Image (cartoon, rainbow, N blue to C red; front, side, top):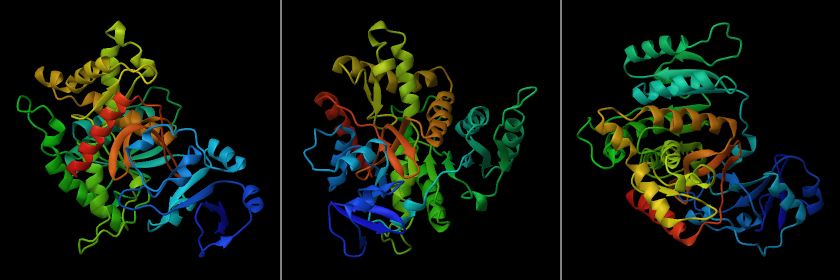
Length: 414
């Protein structure tokens, strides 16, 4: 292990670098705060930064779906004091091949976030209602924007008038913003949606019907984020979230000549929110059948929000047949709502939207799609100011094959 000092921070690496000031292990050990592990990973398929959760991550040479699996007992020789820092989540990987990687060492989160949202349709309106009701502890303001000014005026009035009598606890203010102010915030939420099939005309995977129209719009905003040098979180709620995240990533990091230069949004800034409602739907069905009740305490969901979804009945005692059954029930839940003549937007807006976004801001475990080996893959994770921490599990082979297939399918689409 090599030890370096850079801008008053301690860097470590299993490789030798001549462009950093070398220090002794003793000097590194007595330092306070975060330690940064330098890495040389492919920028197209690797994150700019992430939380080191076990010593094996110090030696990875690429990223992929295997990172969802718990690491085997490591034979690497890592000093005990570094392992202790890892256990306290104080070691952060830095991909040196990413422009602006130094920014990670300067990043911190505010006590209360300024949140801006674009798109005030069914999902957007319900989502800001949830944030107004539940986000007083961590959100200072909710900026709202839509190309239809009547929607902006309506939701500013309606949501601002949600207030209990004799109210004493703070609630986020709701403010109208112009498009030029859209990235003056800590979190931008993309809720614009085009091409939602009318009731009765949908196919099996409604979300894919929206990709063509929504990708054009999100790429426009991704380019704006690049031009504004946006440093906050770019949250995607419109469907299909995983593919729209990848589209935004590529668009933001492409220059005017069409060359990828990675000068736009870092992959760890982009997150997709569609899996929260799939977990909630699986829980809904699990509560109704005694043989599935264990899902509420032991279950997990992975992958996209739609075709390719993986529901695991248990991570302790995985049952393949029960998991497939619960997966199919969950995938078809939205179609049942549509058959009844309604758009299924309330649960997605709150479970995937408001609740998951608030968990992200608070640094809590939640479901969202994050960058993993060039694919935005849905899994349990939490956000820190220095990057994402993925939940890593002892995944049974049968379950991992399902996850791997979903991952490879997403990779093949875009």
